[in-house]
Amino acid sequence: MDPASPTEVFESSEDFTVGIEEEFAILDPETRDLAQRFEELSAAAQGDEVLAESVAGELISSEIEIRSGRGQSFAEASTLQQEARRRLFRLAAERGVLLAATGAHPWADYRRQRIIDTDHYRRVEQGLRYVAWRNNTFSLHVHVGIRGAARAVAVCDRLRPVLPELLALSANSIFLEGRDSGLHSVRSQIFTKSFPRCGIPDHFGSLDAYSRYVDTLYRLGSIVEDTQLWWSVRPHRAFGTVEVRICDAQSTAEEATALEALIAACVAQAALDEDEGVPYEPQPNRMIEENFWRAIRYGLDGKLIDLERLEEFPAAAVADRLLAWTEPARSALGLDPAIGPLNGAQRQRRALEAGASIEEVYAAEVDATQRTYAATEGVRT
Image 1: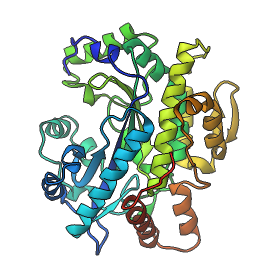
Image 2: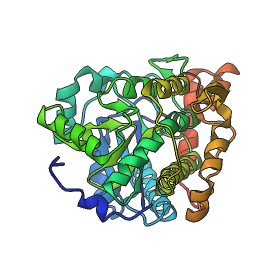
Image 3: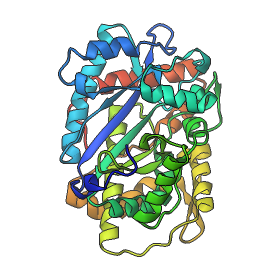
């Protein structure tokens, strides 16, 4: 987007509209290895009135994304996304492929994956080379409408310390290159820790500071479009939203929907806190990064740091802490996310420790994805 463009898109944005984006791995049904068939699925999707608008490419030809489009509420966006899920999984089944939703593939060779042929991803590959080639990962993103560009920057500032907590909650990628990585979110290590302008952004403090930074990147040739800002939370100047991008893809539709509802609540609560002048102390990146690493390494099985008290707390308490903080926003927006007792990384590690092979653990996750995303009626929000 032209960096000189005015901020009218944020000034005309509506608070708390929601858009959902979910990324899936495309698999061979026999081997469960990555299958480079995005172009085939994308072409077939053009014959479906819903999928023609919601299917998108995402870096490699063995990956496919669906987007809800803008919902006036989370419930509307979730309903749109559930219908897109159902249609996409039916389309994939008709063409003899499986779709999976973990943060990374357990054994696929990144060197065999092909970057899709679009202007954007040609620029990504040319600019990043190995960093782009290595990034065979899968995530979910949530956009929440925020009126006012300065307010959107302030919301992003307030969400910085929340990001590692959302990552710990969503962690769902323990395997890479055919072995147990020892991490809970290996996706974050190979994407967020490798891409430039990624991870936890600085505290900007004002729209002017944010705009000066972005404009400088354009002027110096570091970026040619806003989408080259890969931060884990960012103001999206094309949509007038705050976009949260920190989370691993979720193996089941129920897990995805609950996480998306909680993310929407976090963004809305940050906006309400900003409107009400709730005081907060901007945390230095070095302290947030401590929690970020703990979330990558141990997920919900470890401990995180309460950055205000500088005390540890069990990461397993993250869901309750976030639900308590967001209660006003959730009450206003009618959000009641059903967070399960274990996340994907914990479930996989428990199965591995019980004697299952990597192949068996992944097969169980793929089966759960097939079962739940293909029929998502009645998923709680």
